[in-house]
Image (cartoon, rainbow, N blue to C red; front, top):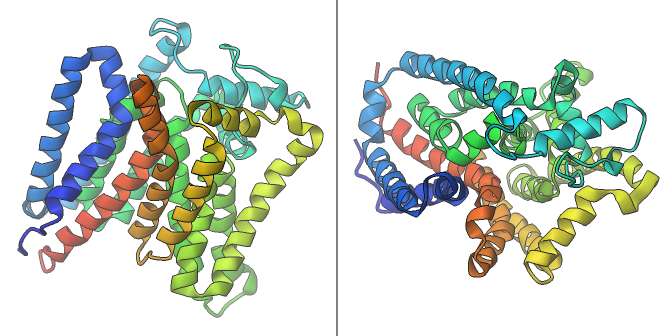
Length: 393
């Protein structure tokens, strides 16, 4: 077993900070400041212990045990959703979130042939999901409610973690820390919100797109070869066209591909993803650009929280995506680059709100930063653990 890296404690504490970044507001709201302090100490202690013990635990826990655990987690989540979501809708748990209502209202308007962004949620808010979010939520809405998509995306994330991580135990720990047992993510998932699943499907699709775009075109039928590359990129374009913050994703991907696969692949991937985003959004802009709330509402909200935030933070985030993307070597590195680019926009807002006394109310907005950053750190731990486990039976 190789010695523990000198930066391992730092990585563990950073992972703990990412968990706390998104979940501290929920813990404080429901349990109070004392419980929040205990929670932060506990998260840090568990992270340090796991980073130190992962090599040894990985030797003891079989992949089959991890598979069973993931299945159990999926079943428990489904049962919890069936129990909690109706209560959240009834108001028993408070006012709740209107994110699922935004998707339902928009899709219902589209089904009637109306402009979705004229609608309002039951809380009177404008609709902020971009058209890609409507498209991805459409099958669930057709079954009864857009919130039902959570029953698909979380199990898919569990499956993705099992397949993507070489150490199945590290994959299990990742989804446990940043999804299933993360208070902010769990609250969003069980009450029908789409904020967490939004980040999850962007994470999964950009990983698939990177892998597809880096592969050499194998000899064979041209249609099949094109589908293997184009399909994941089209899916990424739909996923990116869900919230405006994810504009950094194709930029980071293109920068990474430029370094690893050449400028032709990079520009081709960026062009295709951008074309999908334009194809989804342009019709709505042509109908009524002034009412296209995903842009003007979100941008105005950022500018109210942070002076000239749209220009300053948006530019800084894109520059960070380019800079970090050019340093990508692995799939995990790309997620880290995206997480860093998202953090460039989110963290200043959180700090600004902290000064104004509203950080804890905004902390759940850092869910994408936590998920992408957590995946990057977990993949680094995965490489260390599997490197020390070579040759096991």
